Length: 340
Image (tube, rainbow, N blue to C red; front, side):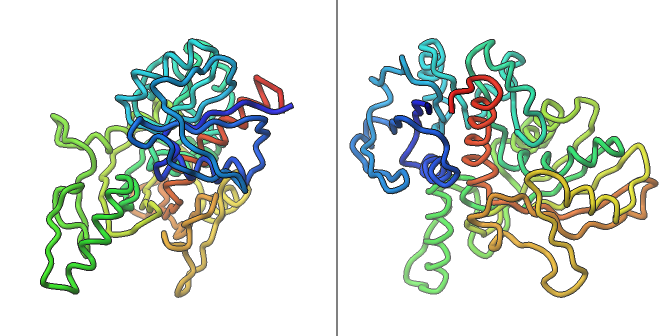
């Protein structure tokens, strides 16, 4: 016996990835519905070998459905997710709306799967920010061994994190550079993204950080340990898919780089590719389409007593969004609902 599953926002990048991953991982689906806004009503999407037509989110009845995966913005989620939850359909939300709600668990299954039991307070589970998700997968096994005091992270985030419009803008601007007759002004991003990097993701806050940077701080504390200090600089780069992060970690106890490498090799969801030679590391291009969080460039930081540096890369549409949501659904099924 399987589950009745709803994918909300099925026509977007993340929604389509959710459908692909549900099929790839053979999630036990008895029935599936795909929802979108009224303007996308009837758009066809694929689930494995099946073609499905989207239904209208505004009029859909969630009663009798088990799990819903949400890949729409906070505005639509705020209006419709509580209705789904009240109807008995567990909401797994990819927006930022519920991440900081103390009554809603924020889950990365490799890190804090036990928190899934707290879903019943609101019948809602939150999916973390894409940049946070991959980082905490790497931090947790190291934290268990040597206790992390402080993390300094610089991100190199792909344009797909800004949706299809971000990918289109990079594509169009790149073409325009080789065709001087045309010019594509920034719309999705604040400055030209083609052949450039932009140290600005989301809105600025009073302390000078951006909200994307604040998310990494708040979410790491909620998912891993509130005592960990985090400072982040988040940068948009001209890469279509795959977020990269340069992570500096300060521990309470000494952790040798070789032991750290061994710990990460055994950790769930991680693939260590770390050879000190040309090409002995992973870049975003190699991570695209893969489930793993890739770790490279592991080395001691000699400037502090107990420090390590590492390079962390993952497909942001997968582990950073769709895959993590499906893994939450799997965890919910295995530990709570126990149907499939």
